Length: 234
Length: 234
DNA sequence: TGCATTTTATTTGTCGACAAGAATTCGACA
DNA sequence: TGTCGAATTCTTGTCGACAAATAAAATGCA
Image 1 (cartoon, rainbow over the protein chains, first blue to last red):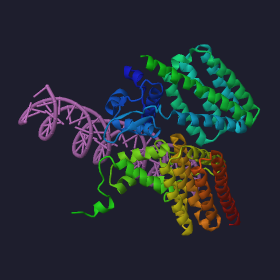
Image 2 (image 1 turned 60 degrees about the vertical axis):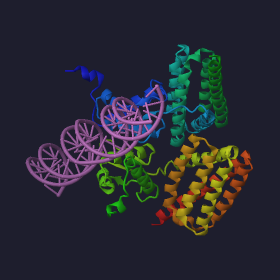
Image 3 (image 1 turned 90 degrees about the horizontal axis):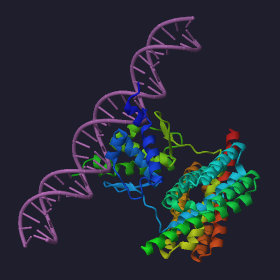
């Protein structure tokens, strides 16, 4: 006894409304389906999800709290912009969190953490093998997020995940250029990271994580200057 | 033509509802007027603020996003507990953010930042002079928050403010014991911090911030063991 | 009395409606 | 034709109401 509506909107249960809208909007923002600056219309969303504006608004409040959307009082709300002018603050925070979370993972990880980390690494390697840039971005973030989880510091986990989200948006902008040789190097560096975490070598974990993070930052920087050149060329 | 209601609820304007509820509840949670575990009743709040449940709920969603309240789906919502078992994760994050924000302040501060920092330091010194423990907690947090602002990294500022909030709750629990001699030492250390920031001595800023943070952590730790002794004594 | 089950009450999640601001359109006048 | 102001349309913030989910109370039974 399934009707067609049940396929489009899968039998929403009471209480799942906000979470559903939140998850989907979040994905669409991070995947740049909704690019920075896109207007967000409550009424439109309400029609799309076939629910009233109240749960939509609560989802938007959550997204706003995480800085993914900007809300002008009594006026429009839109997907938050990426602050290219102060990108260095993002890089600083990212490198530090790479280091700290990897350090803590080396200190506090348990056996099951390593299994989860290795599983994500396998997915990342597969994405590199398949030259699937979007999958590389997602699996790389998941890999490092798993390392952070193994470190068991909720404050660092929270900030790091937020940074990884922001990085996901930034990399999406340039994912075309992921066709070079660097990804294989990242795969190797990930393996080294796993090794020093497993050995509980905190200092080595710090050193490798730092080098790895600076690699990534450097790559993003190169994407920027290439983009600037294109701008000038036009 | 003012009526009595206008005094209790000061002429609420459209759009200010959520912010008002959010600000007030946040203060009451951080000041332990609402201690951890307190139940939060939407209807009661709606009556208290003389508004409907909708804006109340949106304020609660924000507070939930910041981890200040916990919400069980379809069930009660309450002020989040302080996780004493994993207090070390809080200390780790706090020390690191003290160091990082002070470093960045030494690097990036401007003249007006120093003025703001010195103003907060003056207020802190006054609170110590007056032996006003609650004012010490608040002005100390404001002092370090101002240093973080001078560092101009929004990611660090966000996490650090969150940690300072949590610290405010923890210290409130024990603020009686602030009657010892340590506060004067903190005043002196603050002066040293300001000096190295003004000199833009990054490494010294890091070193002093770390020592200062570890002082504070050590003091909180001592409060804990004293509390445990009292528990045993009973 | 103690336990299981039904009934009632309370609380939460969602809804449709309305009114206040802001943006837009329209029209008057120069 | 261009500009200013009034009127209209649109969007947002808030409201009161209702129904689902849970908790509490009441009832029945051993």
